[in-house]
Every structure is written in structure tokens, then in C-alpha cells.
Image (cartoon, rainbow, N blue to C red; front, side, top):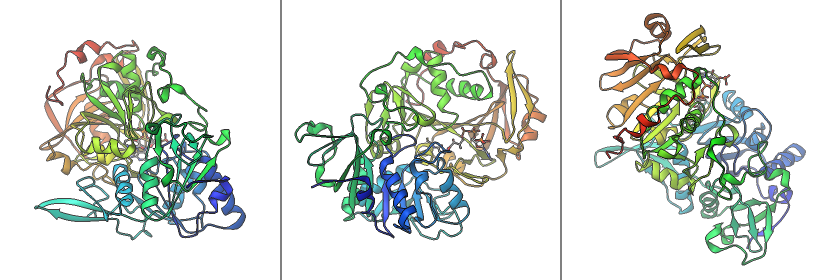
Length: 530
Ligand SMILES: CC(C)(COP(=O)(O)OP(=O)(O)OC[C@H]1O[C@@H](n2cnc3c(N)ncnc32)[C@H](O)[C@@H]1OP(=O)(O)O)[C@@H](O)C(=O)NCCC(=O)NCCS
């Protein structure tokens, strides 16, 4: 039976050397009051020490001290095993400086591992990750030179290659909910997404560990409809009622936005249009690949803008957008809200969403791109001093029927203007993103060429496809010189399509909407074979 206690008392349940699993996704679902209590205890007493921390996605805004950044302390952490890294700056610094062991596994694999751990299974077997950096023939998911554990093994079943990801016990799970009844049953009606609250709690339970839940309020037993209970009280050891300031739905953004969790619906014409710049050019070009009735995922970073463009073009309703922590339908949100959608149609758990994705449920995915190379490989996980981590990228790129990678052609100081129907490059970035060989293989071109999927690479000045013979240039922007602005900015020479053409001029004009809705509506959803 759950015991109600203060955050300080709950923090004392963590012992040095424990493995702690924590829920959350960017701004949602992070138990901030408990993170504060653990940080305070460590700073005051030096305890607990040498923890292994595990989580599915980053939980921070990339710059401030809240969320998982509070755990980034020398001595507090020994090891981190996670699906995504990019938003905890201090934790990234510790990994880069070899101050902690650091591993990155695909986010969907992390979610499915929690379920395996819950049921005392040795691990999971999947195709997800083959030929990417998590494959033991590459780096086995290790992010620095002090990381030597083997979480991933290559195996064969009936002559086919798979990866085996090994389970690990979770001593303490810290998750979040909205209401707890007197027996510790937890509901999540005001959370923006349903996340991995249940899977992670059960993983700790299956490991013989402790489950701590941070909630907003206590309600009388019997108040919560059984269908509303996300984590049953029999799987909860401790409940902490948080102070309101530590239980915002999205910290630093909103205490509570009812349109994220189905309480209200907002009119969609309230979405502000994007300014016309080279980022919008990429989003617009990617949006032209949308097809009616498609099930779509739009990733973190630039692809967040594709949802806005589709709203500008009044076409949000023609497809169903999804986000990997479990949101189906509505309009996906960006920035700290990333992972939520306004006016969602359905919420499923994070591990279930990856069942749907891995099972081929996505028609189209639009994702970021930090580097790409002559083999068609894409890197978003580790570049220069940055560790972004793969997040859902590996699961999604190895399962969606069509994938569009979006990114600039150069980084680090790139400046351009978009006017008069043309792209005007004012200053090239110092870093070329189209390289001979990517530093980290987050998407394997080799895998993609034989998977039966379709892949495109969209930049502000050129569009490429992955063909059987390799990376092929298919479009260039109006106003751009092929030799100087495209080839000279690449470390490899792509194939050139015999049908090379200019990108649609409407993309480069101020006029919004650019008027693509009817064309898109008249397309057949070939990815669905409709
Ligand atoms: C890779 C990723 C960081 C790109 O983000 P983005 O916003 O689309 O692209 P940007 O061009 O603005 O790049 C972000 C930053 O990385 C820098 N960058 C991009 N490519 C780079 C490269 N090859 N080398 C060095 N820096 C690079 C940019 O200059 C920018 O720097 P700034 O923050 O100082 O301005 C982002 O897509 C990501 O985190 N991906 C991993 C997770 C993921 O894709 N999951 C999929 C499902 S959500």
C-alpha cells in the first residue's frame, strides 16, 4: 500500500549505487519536486552517490537548471542509459568529458525494455538499430571512451539478423500523475501525455524496486473511475503531493493548458504563421510531400514547423499527425511543448506508440538532419561537441513507409534571405553538413536501400533522394548556382537525376498560404497503397 510522504522522505528511499528510472519527455511528465529533493539531499549530504540514471527522452529546455539537468552532478551520477540526450546541457558536458559512463539506445527500445524488465524477461529482440551506431559492429550505443558495458548483441534467427537489447534491474522508478486516491491509485487527467508512467513503474516493481509518484492532489478512494487509473496503487510505494510550482503541466511554459489533454478544443486558425526564411523553405518543401489520409510523425527541431505550415495551408485535417510519446491526432506543438498536440484525438502509452510505429503504422515521417553522407546515412545523435541522442529517430526511420530528412546544407553562421521567389545566400556556415562519412550513423543508408522504404533529404537549396545507386540530386532552389552553392558545399558528389528541376517557386514567396491544399488533396496516398 502506498505511503504518502514528503519529497525529502521519498528522496531518502534512493540508495547509493541504485539504478533510477525517471519519467518525462521534454517539458512533460517530469517529477520536478522529486528532482529538486534529490539534488538538495546530494548537495547537503553527498548522498546518494554513483547512481545509474535511465530515461526515455530529455527532460529540460536545453539551457536552464530544472528537470534532468538537476541530476547532472559529479558523484551523484555514475552512468546514464537513455533514449535521448539533447536537452540536458550539464549532463552532455559530463558525458563529453568522460565524467559519467554514457549510453544511447533507441527511445522505442528503451520503452519496450521497461516492459520486458517488468515481466522479468532477459531483454528484447528487434530489427531496430541494425547498421546504426547502436549495432555492436558500430559503437554498441556507447557515447564515450569510459563506457564499456554491452547492452546490445547481434544475433540471428532463421538466418535473419536482429539485435538483442539486455534488460537491467531498476531499483527506483520516479513517475508523475495528477491525482492519487488514498490507496495510491494514480490518474493522469491533467498530464499532457500518458507517457511511460505505467511501464516504468512496473519495471521497478518487477525488479523488486520502489515506485515513487509525484501528484498534484489526493482524492478519496473510489473517486477515480477504474478506467482512469494509469498506475494501480498495488504498484506504488510512495506518493508525494507536489507544491503547485513544481507540478506545472509544462514547466516554464504553462501551469495547465486544457487543450493538450482533451478538456477543451481550440480553434486551429489561432496558430501563428511562420516568418519566411530558409527554415520555412525547408518546412514548406517537406509539407508538399504530405498526402491525404496519411499517418504522420514530425520530429524535434525543424520538422516541428511542418505542422505549422500544414495549418497555414488549412490541411491539418487531411492527415493524422502523431507524436511518439503517445499522441494521436490534433496539431503537434513545438519547443517545450514538443511531444504534445492541441486538440488530440487519442492518447496511448509511449511503449504502445512504438509498437504502432515499429509495426509499420506510419506512412510518413519528417525528421531532422545534422549530417548526411554519400552512403545516404544521416546523423542526428552525435556531432561536434553535441550529443543529441537518437530519440525515436531509429525506430521511426526503420519503420515509416516514407521518410523525409530536413536540414540546412551548412551550419555555424549560415545566413540567407528568401525574397522575390528566390533563395539568396548571404553567408555560408563554417560546417558542411553533407559529408564524406557521418560521425554517427543514426539512419543507415545501407539499411534503407534494401528496406523497401522511400527516403528524401530536403535542404533550403537542394532536394535529394536515396536511390538504388546512391544519393541523387532531384531539385535545386531558384536563385542558386549548382556548382558553387550546391556541389562546392558538399564533401561528396551526388548522382544527378535526369529529371533535375527547380524547387516550386511558391515556396520562396511571402504569400501565405502558398496554395498547395488542392494539389495535395488530389494526390493518391501511394504510401498507403490506397
Ligand atoms: C539534429 C537536431 C539537433 C537538428 O535540430 P534542428 O533544429 O532541426 O536543426 P538546426 O539546424 O537548427 O540545428 C540545431 C543546432 O545544431 C547545429 N548543427 C546542425 N548540424 C550540425 C553539424 N553537422 N555540426 C555541428 N553543428 C550542427 C546547428 O547549427 C544548430 O546550432 P545552434 O543551436 O547553435 O543554432 C534535431 O533534429 C535532434 O535533436 N534530433 C535527434 C532526435 C530526433 O530526431 N528524434 C526523432 C523523433 S523526435
